[in-house]
Length: 403
Image: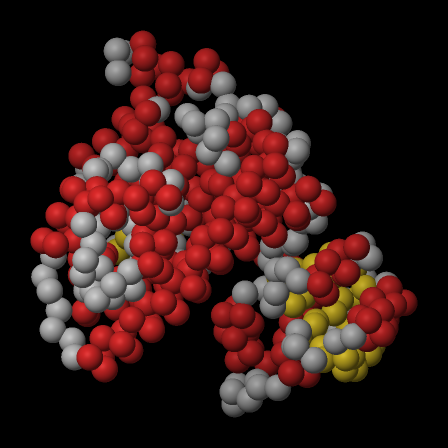
């Protein structure tokens, strides 16, 4: 067995410890997080012929440099490292050099139980960056939109009710023009109709209907000072939301282009009824990756996606628990796939209905369907073949039975 290393990652410096196959110390030092330090670290690992490195992060600049140098990287969850500390220090102490030692020992003794990072191609890395950035921006948009809804409910509920989504382009334009009831006091059907035409409103409601929604809502009783303060808050939230909504749209367009250029686009895109559905398909491509060795079985994919439960057995007690330790982004994409296909795909709808008939609630039934889709998707992914309903055995059997 060759040399192994443990690397405790930090923002400004990294503690590294290198040991041979028997655990004897070969080197231990601290390198700074700079180009010189990263180059020194990689050269140090190569000089000692380190076969594998264990650390607590699955991605980042340093991980990419290690993989590029041909070094096997083990990404260990921080909870596993926390539980392993007691094996070497029962008193419960903690330090960065000690964590590097713990990681090194795990790489030496438990490497066969730990997942290895599988490097992905440049197209997949680019798509992953776009997809994750869009998800982060969407989370920010949701947070700001919820704050805007709460603010409007506090003094002007009608402005929230007039349009379906408070963070839509037309709603934000309305709040920018009419941030408080004072500005909308003289608003009539003709003036509202002109505003809707200028801003390209494409909804199905007339100006009169929208105005009735605005007038039907309860009227607040805020004082002059409070009204001015809340008006300023609404304008601030609208100013923060508008560029977010615009950038999310631009990222979505870039994701569509990056997905179309990806070699696995046809495999994942075939699972969606609407060919324009790119966000979830791109998320599946990005999170699963293009390295077929990463998931040796369909069960491994389902577990990493959080679609399969965790077995809990003790004596005569046997139960299944919700799987919390998984790739949460991948779980979200699988759940979206399952929830969308249950409406139009006969087999998916049947799997979902049977799960509900057994007493599963909606989230549980979605995970049951997601686990079934994981088996199908894994087979297509391994064979590099798009999903073909004619080769889907369970779907053909359901159609034969008249389902």
